[in-house]
Length: 561
Image (tube, rainbow, N blue to C red):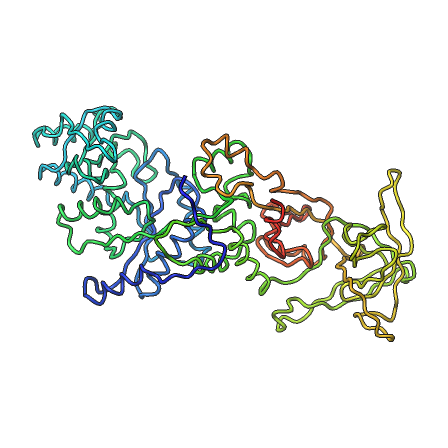
């Protein structure tokens, strides 16, 4: 198998797409720039589409041009309005706005007329061979194709049969319309490609008007041309299709034809973007849906709490190239972490709570402790949290028999409660199974804010929440969905499922959070001190608050492998 380069650091090559456009504008090939983003509405967009969106829309923005959204709805058996709506939402969430929304179906009449023109020119014919026979005729990369026995049928006969196909008189798979190009071409895409087939399915926009539909390779260049696209930007797998793209435009004498430019796809390790395999994940309930926060879909990243700006920064850091590479998922997480560190408000939350009673703190007394809303944005000021005699800390922040260099609460050490007081261990309570249920401490009343008259310092600072002023929440800890770097390389949908990370989701109930987090809105993101970054999930209700972990404070996944 081909060895794949894995990029673990920022790579910012020159943007060769813009170099080509600069050249075209300088030479007067075009006097403006117009691009398009042309997804097929047969599924949800993923991280790879995010790169294409940024390139298509970003290029138009740079040159003061236009970028249209064009839905490639040429296969009615796989397309749905649900996907159209999701695509629009994802583009807007990423921060882009199309100039117009078009559909390939808007051009069906034009594309059909172009097919008739090819027939009249003797450059298209009806082939009644079976799909297997046509596949066999194409030959191989080293063996030339063979001509169809129907290749030289009379033009009038082809026109009649094409009309029969159009009128619904031909069953699916019985006939196709093929372009007549060159069966001996070294480029297999030029070996008389199919340009129309019969599909007796209701289209989500045109209804039952059509029962013949154009193939992508035919519809795409004609849609670009009809729409006025100057630069058709697409991923590298279409590089070998470019001669066919140009051939259709040339023989049909399309004025001011677009220029196709290809770039490398976005390949990120530990992710899956194959729609077929993602659909199996959904259908087999291995994930909760297309927007499961572990999915590499844009809606999944949005639900997990990834900021749109961080995703755009990630695409920008990777740059645009033609070289095949696999991007390290840690780079995406790093962009998310950097953005949230700068912009996320701080909050205290205890995910695995252990009750602490401060024995010498007055019963019934509470204090307001000031903490920074965001230390990176001092203009946001401070907020107050309630301190009381009973608080919660993390279970991992207490140990009766601590290991070496343990600077949290234990019998031998004094620790500081964030923004509050120094405390010392006094005693503890256990249940019938020997599990510690309550830790008793004493506090130093003169240590509020971390300053004491004797200027003593402690190494451990713990976050906490007041037992009398907190809310209970469910927290979902998400990690990468797969244990292998390239799950798409697995042979089948069953084999890649065997490589799911069993720790990709951990659900914690009875977590204790700042009381003011109850008023958060879906998608609001916070740094839970010492824990990571979390956002409020769409499943959250007033009576069942749910937060998703977006990303940890540092990359820990590689250490687990």
